[in-house]
Length: 317
Image 1 (tube, rainbow, N blue to C red):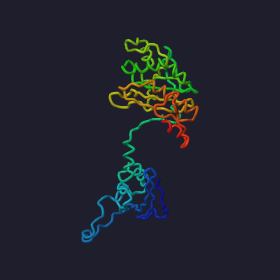
Image 2: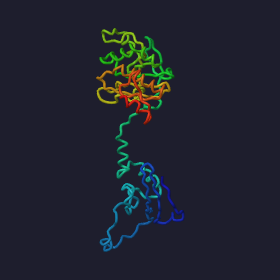
Image 3: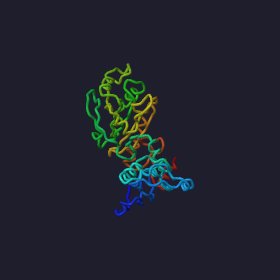
Image 4: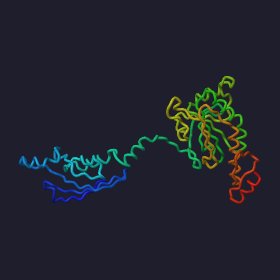
């Protein structure tokens, strides 16, 4: 933003004094710059005597329209190179302040912002889980599946890297075969990868003894546009595995809030029993308000979240 105090009566003089207040909100620094706007004389000026020219050499060899004036320590050097003529003073100031800062804290902030990786991640524990609607293979048919379809239930959403691979079928089959345990806990299980729905369908039609999935009791979501994987922070953005999802597992509660988030690297498979255990713990906490200690399983002892009442658990531990 550039604001100035200009006296219209002085437009005709050959030397006009202006005070400009310069404010740059993005970079957080503020300074006042006083300079003179010089207009070229209408007729040539007589040369100075050689003796005076020798004792008082010219301040600058630049033309008057680009002459630099007294320096101020708080003003960046490129401000002093602004052309000082009446027509483009304002545009020159605008150009100077849109230029990336080259000094001090402002430059450090600019460089750090440019170097920071641009990662879009909206899945946060305790906050509403990112919504989605994706094509899927459900019971051998194509169908759109939305997170809102399971309102009032727990949702176990797990990502796997790719169809027709090695670790992935072992995990998917294990989740599918134990779906009844999840449903007893008021939960549904969804599998997702960045493959197409046609690839999912072909994989389910391949026998398990040949590395296929066979009959599936859980939906297989096709995140072809990779938005779901990016929203949940599991998409690999670069390197030889770019474009596939890590083995991420997320548990969303009946209110739609994200409660559990786990990430595994590509070579390491998951333990399905762990997610059954976590669902049991979430259910106990939701029903009784008590917290679950290490290794908690259904029927185990819980802790009352109170400094005095918790001693009941610790006295027997």
